[in-house]
Each structure stands twice: as C-alpha cells, then as structure tokens.
Length: 300
Image 1 (cartoon, one colour):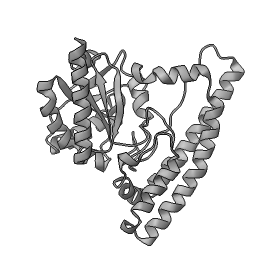
Image 2 (cartoon, one colour):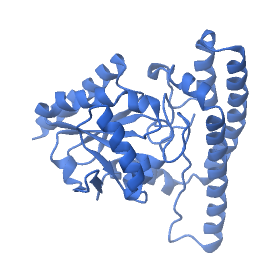
Image 3 (spheres, helix red, strand yellow):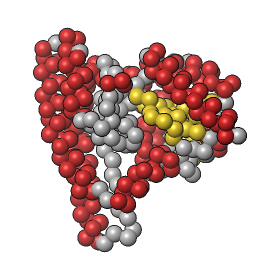
Image 4 (cartoon, one colour):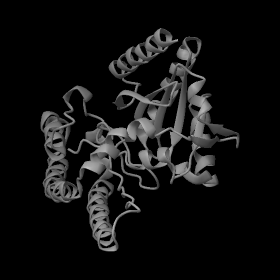
C-alpha cells in the first residue's frame, strides 16, 4: 500500500466526506507549480485526473460492498501494517487470517475486490513514479510539519479557532472522523475519557469531522447530535477544505485516524490507526502522549 501521509493510508476505518463506506480511500490532487510551463501543467493535470479516477474506482469497490468491507476493516491489526508494503497484499493478508469469520460469498467478494485493487494500485504506482521529482520530495518531507501552520476553523458553536489551539497545549490529540463511520462513532466516548485524563497533563483532544468542512451546517448538526448521544464534551471543529489541514484530512484513506500535534503545530510520531476503544490502541496512544508531554517539559 502507498506510504501516504506517514502511513495514514489504511486501517479499520472509514472514508471522508460524503461517502458512506468504511476504510475507503479519498482521492487527492496536487496543485501545479506557478513556474511550470503550460505544457507541463496540462500534463500534470491529466495525470492528477487519472489518479483521481483510479482512487474513485477503489472508493466505489468499498462502497458497493460496504457491509463486508466494514467487517474486514474491523479485524485489522496495526502491528501487522507495513507502511512500505503493498495495499492489496495487506488487505489479502487480513482477509486470509480471518477467513473463518466470513461466509463463502463474503470471501468471494473480498478476494475479487482485492484483485481489482491490486491492478488499480499498480496503475497508481506507475503514475506516481512518473510524477516524482526532487522538488516534490522536498515538499512531501515538509508537508506533515506545515499542516497546522496558519490553522483556522470554528467549533460547532461558531467560535473561531486558530493555531493558538496548539501553542496552548503541550500536546493536542487530533482525531479525524466522520458521522457515518461506525468505528469512528464507537470510539467517541473513549476519546472523551482520554480528553478528561490528559487535561491536567497539558493535553487536549480535538475532533475534526471531515463532513463538516467549510461550515456545512447540515453536517455540523448531524455530527453534533452524534457527539451529544455519546456524551462527548471535547471540542470538534469545522475547517476549510482548501486549507493545509483540510487537504491533509482529504488525503486520509481510512478512518478513524488520530495524530498528535506538539505546541509548535508539528505532527509528532506516527498516526494512530484504528479506534482507541481497543485497549491496546488506547495504551499505545497514551504512551505517545506522555512522550510528547515529557519532551515539551524538557524543552521549556
């Protein structure tokens, strides 16, 4: 599978924006540089368009068979994930190791989809290799650290939020989710518990619901209702889809995904893939949180 966004690429989880299938990839685009020639820009645009089309083909597979894929995503194990591995192989390995949990028809559907994904991934890899340049590599290497620079958004009550959100905390736990994602909703109460646990340590949990981009009032209302039903009190934000953080979230291929952000707005460590209602995930995330807090204390 692709090593995109520090391996936010896969896991038990759910696609952003208006899609309903869990674990689906979100298409992404790359802005052309101002210094490109017209011919270069046109070529880049065609390549990006083809990539988007391929991503959407994968999206559609997951959406068409969402029940069985949701079941499969719930069985994934972070410890088995290899950021440099093959996406189709990872999916196949998950299915094979849990094959007794599926019916014959479900296995047939999953394996057929995986073989289609394998072919799509090969095309994606070929296109991405063509698009790679030294400038792109530099941009990618600095991307994670610049995601929350000039950050802005609003909480669900309409209160403005900026990058002081991060500077005021030793660590900010940012959870990306969306309303139709069952694993996302399942962990909300545990995230609320985590928020209460780390407040005295200088930490805070913040949710970003990817369906609420650009102040989408209907989506905010629906998300707020879900949060209330789960007893969630920590802040959830709506951000601009064209912002650096919005673009970052739009490239997440699996949900829920949780990241840690330090006082300077830098992403620290690897993303947490999967819900923290799983005890191993919760313990691993808490260990990372304490590490960031300790580093913050040392640097003061």
